[in-house]
Amino acid sequence: MKFDISRGKGCCFRVDESRSSDQRTPGMEIDLGKITEGILCSYRTAGGMNNVDESNLPSKRAVASICEDLLQIVFPGFHDQEPIHSSHLSRVTAHRLFSIADRLLAELRKSVRTRAAGQPQLDCESVMIEFLDSIPKVRELLASDVQAAFEGDPAASGTQEIIVAYPFIETLAIQRLAHLFYLQGIPLIPRMMTEWAHSRSGIDIHPGAQIGSHFFIDHGTGVVIGETAIIGSHVKLYQGVSLIARSLAGGQALRGKRRHPALEDGVTIYAGATIMGGDTVVGAGSTVAASVFLTHSVPPRSLVFYEERQLQVLNKDQRGKSWDDWVI
Image (tube, rainbow, N blue to C red; front, side, top):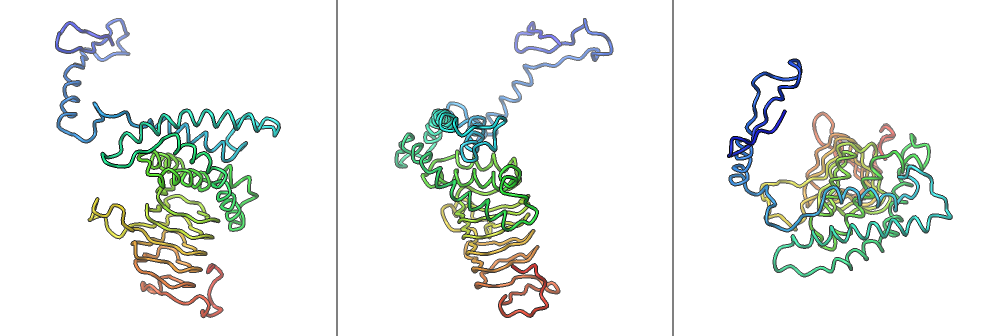
């Protein structure tokens, strides 16, 4: 095809007559001017999707690149094509931190410009320094998560397999890092980070979720954890578990309020279960069976399951010996 600008108002794509007959459609002509005007018209009529004459937003590609490099910092040697010798670790880490800091500061500055008028000013350099300074603490939490996965999954051959192959640990690493920005009130970037991880793993954890140590998501696909969810230590989830809000009918009126459930220490939630509502608390040491839809709190050491289509909540310590060993 060739451009034809002879029509004045727009330009056309015309079929290149030099091409063989089997490579072109006779008489084909595309009026790009008309198509352009149609798209511009949609810009005028469908507002809210245009970022024109506004502040430059954080770059999705830049944030994705930063996430990749953060994983190299958090798990040195696991996200690299070449091995890292211990004698080079200091130099490599310093170089990576310098690169991350330079790019991250630029994206933070874009992000804070989107804050609503009247909100407190944020010092992007201070935010970035505090974030990078918190990486060792995040690594401590992630080490506990890796250990929980190894102890809780007989299919794991070792901690190296968990770090390099289990999707939950990469997703959780990004979420724990994004949570630091969330706590400092940084807009856009925390969610961009967790959605980048979500797109890779199928595990959707909002950066606002509070998650304790020794957290393990087995398999993981389809897990959803909402913004105000609170998860204690030594909690284990299986695939398809949802910790969701009771209703979205309130919309923006519910912003900043508790909408998602809390799981206390030592809770296990089996595949496909849904726990709903900001007032719902699953007590410590409880087990929720597969496909349960739970909308109210249960006390510690509860066993929650369906029996003949009726939801049952029993005390795990008083059950008979006939129960299968799936009860944790």
